Length: 448
Image 1 (spheres, one colour):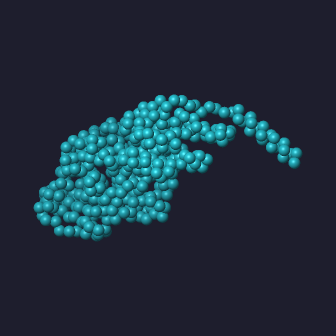
Image 2: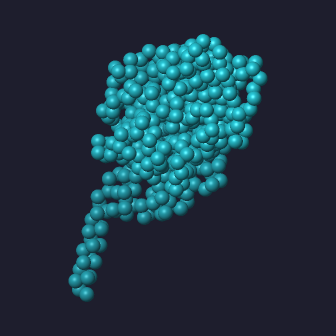
Image 3: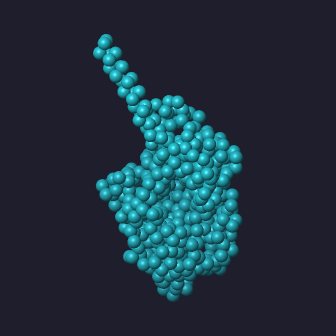
């Protein structure tokens, strides 16, 4: 009994001494808060400011060492990633982009940290509060407004970058110059920032998606996520405009073991400038992808017929093209894409190898397709991206249109498959000619 009392007394004394080892948690003024309505700020103050602001809000039990050290580390890390006290210094668009990311963290359960809300239940974001934040951002409220560029019927200006000469990222990741030949995995209509995204994968990635071998993705997997500004044209549809950037994820669990097995990189603008100021930019990538850690850090739902028993990690509905079609265009390369905001449909124009040989030598104009070229326009309904608030992805296929160019390069065969079963229906010759011309005159989306 005496030994127990001595040990207990020693523990109490040691704990008391530890309380003297208390590095500070800096506090300061709210120099430039986020520009948002009062009701939105109230939600953020209640649920986020404890860690993501200069305000120092500690419960009594947060101040007891050694727990205090963990709290301090979490707060300083949180402030480095997002600080609502100074966020208002950034442009309004950047503030909204930050809030979109925060909302996605919340709805995917990554924020607030579960261990934090276990001890601070008042910081839990209620469904009503999350709905209020989403209503404030309203990503689709400005479709067709000045948020989307409009410059007639042309595409974005052509780039002239030499892909072999692009410098590596600050973390050493090499640019992937062959990415334009990779196959499509999915497409995203981003209402949060008025961009289109095409997600491509190399052969290893495509094979993994088709076989369901994505938990985890195998080493050698490479993804390219290409972004364009959206551009509204005179026909009321929205097309890819100016090229924005291309991002890469490269899987190598040994080489990139310190960054969750993935190499990350982003090249921005017409000159494909590496992103960031130094290698610390990677923390933005890993932090953003943390909510989908259970899906090997991949947000994209690959369009594949392969079933998965792990929840919604693939997009089976968008892949439902009947085998009776004359071609299977989802395995072809992408020429361009478009969205009809009123009908809430999205479409992608695919080309076979012969068509793509012409496309890759064409810039900023309609290609002169050679004999043997086949085009396929697949149109889907849209649905909300379950992994990203503010994004929409393909849903059920609505139609597939084919244009075949013969040896004369003038005579074309037009065929249309639509309806619930995507069956072929007769099209008057004149209508087929007009529709063929429309598809053949679509300028390819601008690539480096």
